[in-house]
Image 1: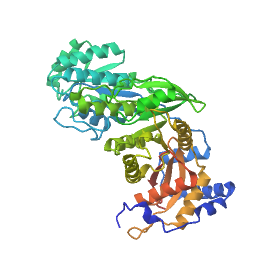
Image 2: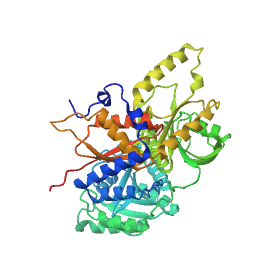
Image 3: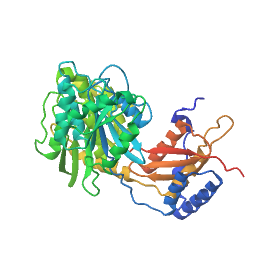
Image 4: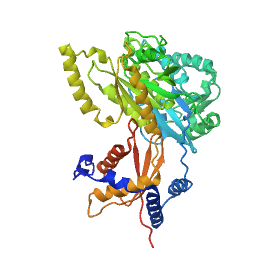
Length: 510
């Protein structure tokens, strides 16, 4: 049997988990958990483990709110080595590197770390201008990135020197008032240093000579950036205690702006039949269901036909930036169209960001019961949802019409449910009782003559709910999915991703 067994194989019919747990009171659950916790002392634990367990003993039940990470954007024209620099900073090959200018990727935001400082790295390499539109495209792409970041790295190919395109970007950078680091790339050895010095005349201060491919000079550059990078992003500022923050996501023309306008009760966002007419992300405080909400609209960006490819890139950049700021995402899907790869990519971005999720099926009024086409589409839609969105079946679903405002009132309870789940914490005693009873009824399959044991479990954090299992061996992915599903069935968690991490620990040698 392969290790990636599907979760279904771990369901040998009915179990009595709910009744068994109901019979265990909090005191007994805590006593049992304490005994399991003592048993962990027989295993080799590292400093991180000790920190996690110490936090539990202190009983800190407060919700930790992770501040928005500061954002560093990498801008520059095609083929100057932006993606190579991203890979060098991340220490792993994540960004696509090809000799073709403008290789488009779905992901543009990466989590990076330097000298114990975490930050978001935005790579603006994924767009494909034609030769005529290149100056305009680079400038537009730089403008978007500058808006969304705290610090800019402007990459120039030092062996080519500054071009007219580079000079266009310099004008924008000067106006922005943001800290800018001029990166003179492709300086592979000391003999090429004079090429970097020639870039002083761009007027952006000292050029930093680096070789993204060989790593030369990159550490010094990052040290300098850390001196000016804020601890918390000034752009994606996390406001604690303010209105809950909602990102409205979806591919162009699914009705994101119409939804915001209807919620706000007035025309706040330009709505146009042309896909991607909204350029700036619009933050609006809106009263809905007797509560204030902060809506972040991320409608596509203005585009020309020859920038077709680039527009998807901008939309992805906007989506990533909005998710940084948001707590819950409403993904809008146009029910009159088949569910597309782009819809699924957007949902994946939300899952990756760990935000709460609500799915709004828009233009529902077009699926008219009297209309045969509408009935057919509805039937196909339900099948598509069942097949393509099975992995997010836990997300609240709202059928709306943003144009007419129909069922918009149902959005509020869905948002509240998702956020409540996102903040939900299961006490350590209860969680260990759940794990113990689950394993008793459904033991992990034996693999290679061994059966991994779960020694102890805890919820390490909320937003999203993240659980850590200390185990004596590797748990099958299918078994972990089974744990997640049973957690949902017993504790709700409707509208939030759940993360289950494993720490495999070995018994101490006596």
